[in-house]
Image 1 (cartoon, rainbow, N blue to C red):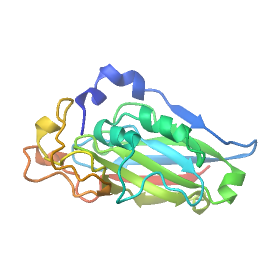
Image 2: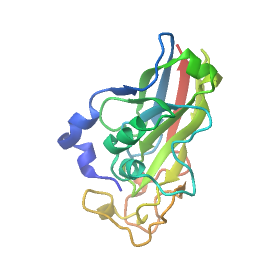
Image 3: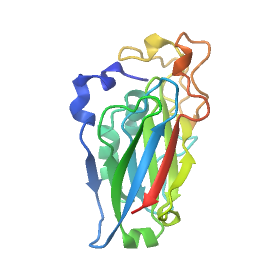
Image 4: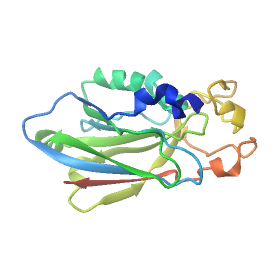
Length: 220
């Protein structure tokens, strides 16, 4: 669920600085840049995470229950719990978070990150995560993209939308703030997102349709 506090000064300190966790960098690194654009009419994207992880691993899996960290991200946009989870995962190579406040409609923001060349040669993957801010528990992701597919030319793609399954998707404005916690009809597992519930009372401009974000990568 969206939490208005996420978008205010109360937690600015949590999202206003670039934070990077690196768990296995060698002396020789390859530098990349990713850019995420919010393509909704008037919704928000939380400051996104860029997660580099080993081949054969996933940060989340459709059909399974969301971890506590993914639940927090999908419901509030906060990332402290998922970053703590990732720091304990031996298959995670690095985690970076873009700085600034949530991205408004049409806004694009870039983030540079580095990966050791041995990990790239070994098939390292990159996953991007951000909350769809005015939603119950929806998030965008580019998942498990092989870093060796990224070259000097910009590699662009549409992010997929997911539902964390931890809250009911009412589509009501009163449930998209810090006090709303509708769980009566929560799915209980991650699924592909169905968009803002049209039976709710949230304004049409909050809708995100099949694409809420575009993501691009390049090797520097």
